[in-house]
Length: 193
Figure: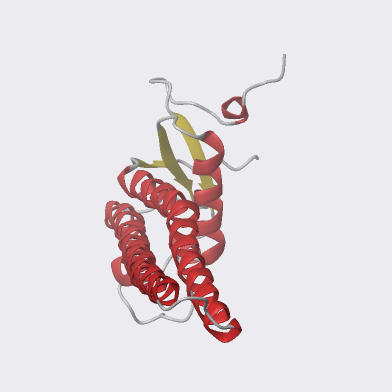
């Protein structure tokens, strides 16, 4: 029987999966471009963000903690800064994802409304041509073209919603889970003599 993915991770005594992060210094957790910003306002390093999100995706719905280990144990102040940074960064990512989802929903709704309006117009034009008798070739092409445009718009709205909405919800939940995860710190191993 294959081992479960979570078996690759250490666990706390309470049974929480541990996502381990090792770095030389606290400063290694942050992007270099905003050196003067306070830690709680800095962006986390892109590799760290990718690592955390992929680990949390991998373990699925399992409760977890994030455990940091540095070459020297950080002060209480630095531990608080790291906890705050992780929390605020992933809350910010969640807010960005919410905004992207709302934009996608507005686009899908706009396409749907446009498609329905064009479909109504197409039905009206088709009705006019039937009332007038045998429509000309150009009238038929115009009416059919309106119908096709209407259905393409409605189809695009539905596919935008059905394909993108679940992905946005998944990322929102992922970012929320990371933001709310407990952050722990482990003592570095004692040097060998």
